[in-house]
Image (cartoon, rainbow, N blue to C red; front, side):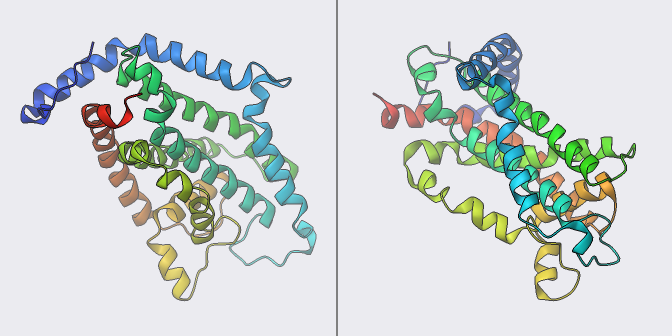
Amino acid sequence: MTENSGLSPLRRPRRFLVEMWAEATRTISLARLLLSVRLNQLYRHSSLGLLWAVVPTLVITVGVTLGMPDARDQVLRPTDVVPMQVHVAFGVVLMQTFVEAFNGQRSIFSVHLSLLQRMRFPLEAVTMAQIAESTFHLIAKMPVLLFVLMIFGVPLKPQLLLALLACLPILLAGIALGALLAPVSALGKDLDRAMVFLPWLVFLLTPVFYRTPALGSWAAVQMFNPLTAMLDVVRYLAYGGGSPHWSTFWTALAVVVLVLPVGLVVCKLAPPHLAERLAP
């Protein structure tokens, strides 16, 4: 059982990290159980069951596709090897993954409050279950992208496997940012209200519904947008074309790898400081 204390465990950082890792390994079975319960809660009482993990993404993708000009009528640049529908479908699915991972991780204290307070459920189990749930939703979206590629006659190349692997940095970026902001999200509703418009702002600032510009001031902005680099790398590996900013991609990946454990440590340290504010 975890005992909350006002004294910071970071006074002994090595011991703290070792105990955190040991607790995570001990609670893998609990995380697996919590994931199963969570998926049952989400999909058990619906006629389509687990298919609901795919249906929203499929409906949005089909709607966007039907709302665009026919692929034969589009004027493509020399670097555009696929119709706009394919470009947008990848953007929508990947940004959905980012937003869902962010929302899931930032909400662990509010969604699982009863488990953490009354049942003394290990925070590590809750965190791992949430990461696994976000990963499950990402995997569930992959058939939609394959379907889009086949519908528009895009050849499926072996490097498509690398594209699927390149989706992980987007998932991890959402998890890392959500973990950092989870304590803030638990203390008030400001972030919940901001999430009404923030995803749309991110969609506008990132080339989801438009091609990545090659020239001009907006192209210079996109050169330093980490989400743009991540999306363009996945698109490049999936069907070619374009010119992703690899330096931005690798820099963003390195930052994510560093920020993710920091975010998890922040979540681990938060409960003693949140206990009074979140008390029923």
